[in-house]
Length: 201
Image 1 (cartoon, rainbow, N blue to C red):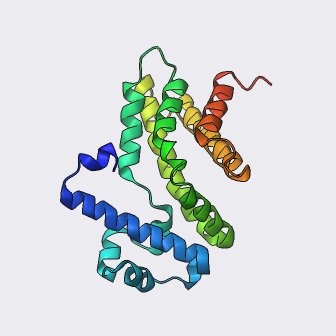
Image 2: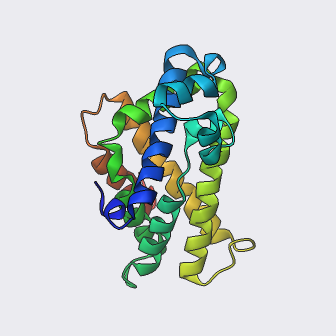
Image 3: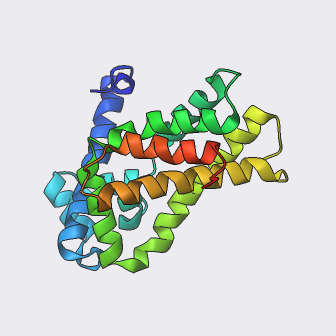
């Protein structure tokens, strides 16, 4: 159980567990048979909850696959804003993302299944990218807040957030392609070090 879980009440922990179980079952079924052959009823029967419970957490099956979590965005926001002042915005963002993505090593099966689902059902890609876009907008906002800039009209916060996401995606792709022979953390930090150095080579 994570530190965040221990700070939640019993009811909230149960809600989170139910949400995770529904998302995981949707993903496993989609990877096994294709999302077009998965129904909400099949997912809820497998988890042992009602269809109504599913829709309390997700508006549709596709959203269960992307499973954006608001708590993650808020943790990243706090980490960026609370980072030492001597760090650049890029350094603060890289540390915050490294902390948030540390669980990828433990949750590697989910990441691999998600990539398999996207390859099998490319029609899901727009929705997946939209969910990632929401994460990117949150990063733009927090970088702008740290720098005292406007997230809508200033270029730098947007540029910084997008290159940070690109670094993470590159690290994930290499990590998966290499069969996890290197740790994701080392690849992520290498990617951000290259960005901080200005990609000179």
